Image (cartoon, rainbow over all chains, first blue to last red; front, side, top):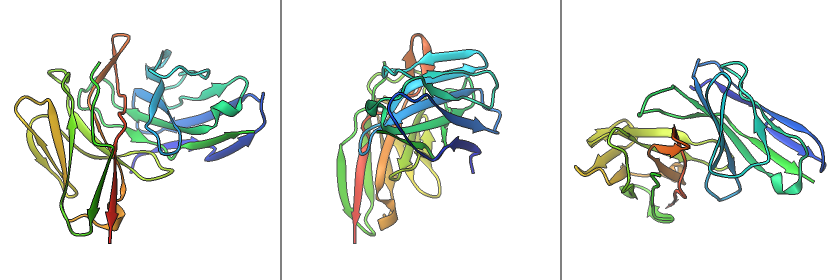
Length: 114
Length: 112
């Protein structure tokens, strides 16, 4: 079993609040990803990281930001949540450098902004 | 940009073999092809991965022709619990760096 954890599992907040979605992995993986997925829709890459102090934006424009201060931790922050941010957020990790990389996903955070 | 194309949905019955084909015309020379399974409200889970010819594990087989521009995931004797969305992934290039982006996936519905 993959050791990648996301908290909280569910979050309901009001508009304008600042939130941080947590993602941690204990596998020592260098690469980490954040995907956003609406119900019944495909996953969209919003951020990824190659390692500590490395962050890149994905193909879906997002108002969120990420940081990578430690290898095992890749939090995602929304400075001012809006109803349009309501979605499922999935974190994943993989080993760096391999063209045969395999993604390990967390259980996701279901965010609802009222 | 290596994008993938799959059928949006497929229907099958319990006990049948299901084959899902994915097109990836721009796959890079050294990239592998990886398939994932996703159930509602869960993150995708790795099923199988291959580079060429045929790969088989305990849950599926993966067929890749010589030109590697497509691949076929084969699920033998599906059951109701195989109802899920299946994604194929190949490498992608974002600002010159390698990332992994998902296509629309194939929604498989298995009937009794």
